[in-house]
Amino acid sequence: MRLVTVAGPPSSGKTAVTIKAIASLHREGVRVGVVKFDSLSTQDQSLYEKQGIAVTTGLSGNLCPDHFFVSNASDCLSWGKELGFDLLVIESAGLCNRCAPHIQGVLAVCVIDNLSGVDTPKKIGPMLKMADVVVVTKGDIVSQAEREVFAHRVRQVNTSAVILHVNGLTGQGGHELGRLLLDAPETTDLEGKLLRFSMPAALCSYCLGQRRIGSDYQMGNVKKMDFPKGEPCTP
Ligand SMILES: Nc1nc2c(ncn2[C@@H]2O[C@H](COP(=O)(O)OP(=O)(O)OP(=O)(O)O)[C@@H](O)[C@H]2O)c(=O)[nH]1
Ligand SMILES: [Zn+2]
Ligand SMILES: [Zn+2]
Image (cartoon, rainbow, N blue to C red; front, side):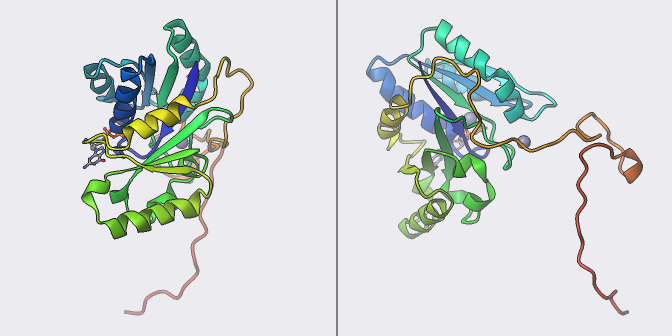
């Protein structure tokens, strides 16, 4: 089975472009399944189901959805193999700019939208930087010049990825994305494989449910900011 991780900020168009790519693959008889990860809730399950796409959802609750995904990655693979898919797509939540679900040897896709602002490519970090394919959406809403500037900013962060413009509404570019997904390497087992980027260290009181503010309540991996020194304002 081929495996793909799809990451990208919330509402960037991950589901829309994945549906268009799968529609193209369905026409060729390719069997595709999807696992969607999120933290609290998601409409994606029903969006995929409406298109006749086999899908299951993992909600992480009070855990980081990317950490939750890694803990369940092998189980996703087993589910996909059991159902006999040719291709399994894992759609992440994309909630944390410091996390990425991308795995070495597994095709990694990042979806980012033209409207998110020219500084966003730099901000979203490993989701984009570690991707093999960057899908840029919502080109229909911006000008040609804005599309070019945005693609340039993406290129500055990721010098080697294939950059593909896909319209999540019309499906333009969806066929090309489908071809790229089908080119993903075969993955028979994830045991011992490596994430492309380490997840952020945590384990402080707040990870464990603490809600009170103040140094007495902060234990474990706590990091403090350095504030600039300055003269107090004169009245
Ligand atoms: N105009 C326009 N809208 C788009 C495009 N792609 C997606 N959208 C819209 O953007 C919204 C979010 O798209 P989704 O596909 O749900 O985004 P997502 O990244 O899967 O969202 P989450 O899984 O909730 O993080 C939807 O209303 C889509 O119809 C596009 O290329 N152009
Ligand atoms: Zn989605
Ligand atoms: Zn995180």
